[in-house]
Length: 376
Image (cartoon, rainbow, N blue to C red):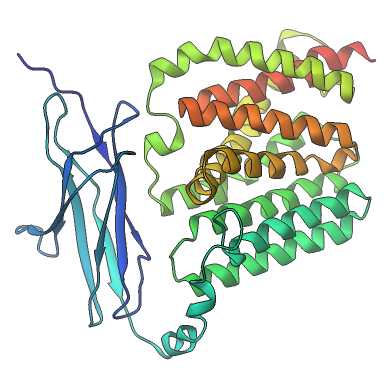
């Protein structure tokens, strides 16, 4: 009996709410057990009438297992689409979730058309357009001010970036917004983080609250973008389990290096089992998961798509390192940047969120738990 490997196909419309007459790209990724499936026919169906699917277009997945269709309409209407991958050899047939495209017209359309050329300009640096470079510049500027001790000004620049991101997303009308959204979330993350300044004594409970708040915008973006288990790095549970020991070794090694650079006091009062369990829960399910999702699931893949693998990982790492500016220690920023390269490369090579989370969590548990107790 022939055994077929289950396949997964994603589908997103960009922009999902276009103006009448604008092109819409319906694109996605075909994978099997986390691996790309190339040169496989995929078919776009119109499902306005659920009882009668209409075959609209056909294409083939590229060398990265990705595909793209372009659709448009000249009247105000809503269309529904699904994408199916035909089964081939050992791979089973796959069908995406339904995506909807709503065409509309308004006076705002006429106003934004005048701005369209500015937002469709050619990339100016490392494959990034000016409106993608602007949030990166504002983030790094805000962190630079924080590093210099100007926390209020730094927070103001991060707030300015959030406003700029909102305006850019509005002007883009849903096209190429994933990177912009991720950069906006980084500024939100910084402002939430700065709430530590209002707390006389930082404890693991405050840490859980501050990082826990970031789940709300993160989940909103993940749901809005209809990210798959592969996109999130949770497609292969068995591999994740096998990679956890490696992550623990790397995380421990990084903790000893960071402790030599910036000795931190422990966030727990003693090395009892209860205290260590509480610290571990916070560092795994709040700190490490939130940072892993934000930097390596949402931000890095978008930068890689624009700038290439090496540049994408490096830009992500620089931003990740800059977010440690609050320590006001240049060596800590450099260490965090290097750690970002390790984490970014690990996620790119394995597409495994558990590995990244384990490295970060173990690093923090050892640094703020075991080693932190030694300096008391």
